[in-house]
Length: 521
Image (cartoon, rainbow, N blue to C red; front, side, top):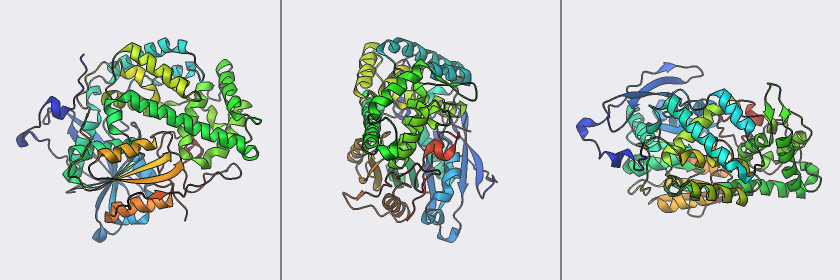
């Protein structure tokens, strides 16, 4: 099937007013904890707005004092693949009081995710085999098998979710948001999106600039690179992740008393540990195996928490050396992970326009692995899972991309849009936030000088600035930088320090539940 690289609005010119999709009717019911839940029916394919529908799961919690309510605040988690329903339910209590008092807080599972017709590609057994066979330190000979496994993944997507695949791209997600905005009775959108949620917000602003009241985009993407130059986007992500890991290892060497890993040369010890686990995996309690890929996979996600997790990394790496399965770095990806990872691949393969040249693919993933030697090889030559591992699948993507958005990202005529970037972000590099600010006609950049992914909830300064913007439309002064990151504790914390996420340490096996965090003052 031919790949279509233009969004639906260009594939089929804008529908007439008579063909506009119906606004969904929301029948709210109590779903515990003061939350209300409902379902929203929206078009499966916006080229046929009166045709087949897909049902989205939505949630809200009303502002306590409706007389002071300013509107509805949409919260959008990272991903793609994270549940917006769980994001609202799991983070509502940690939101600043000013947000809870000013807004009904709203979220939803985007099409293909969670409770909204979830995508299915590899089943749990096949995904388990993929991550068990993967290596933490693969060689270039792994490229061919990686391409073949990616083709098998694509076929599984086609077999299990073929009717849905063309329609899960971000242009259609943005159109869904605009219908939900109308269903909630809002004239304009007030929105906080983190990580991939920032890209969803960017596309919404580009498509509906006059309907923007306030958009806070935290951990922002460079949308032009993401959508239209994906190898450039991938390269910066490889480098950012490896740079964050390198800074951790430098700290570990400089503060051996706290880190305790590596006997004076943690970098060499880390490379040896990957190879040792690849050669001799550790049996886990549930009958699985933890190998070098397991180690890299866990580091990739947990390093997002910034410096406060560094002592915990040191302890977990020591335990991994001892083959102690209480180390959170020796938890193989589980079915809870796979529910996130499958949609993560599919959505990005719909959104991103990878060249289909296999020789270019090999050159790029090989060069990325060489440029990011700590974690990059496992990403480059591993199975389709998270961002860095999508090129092998996306260059072979078998379905048309009718729901992809390809620009412009100018959002001409919008209200000011707040872009938040963290200088040491290992997942969405800081230069992406700078690039997005420049691409937006009315972008305003807020910088958080820190390690880790995103700023809201990790920095009192950034949290206050985002809150003031969302509530009162006050944008930070040009050049504003927050520098209040929590520093590494002197000992490994037994519980998550306030203002952190600490991913698995905080959430146990509840993997990929996005946490905003709570800042102490």
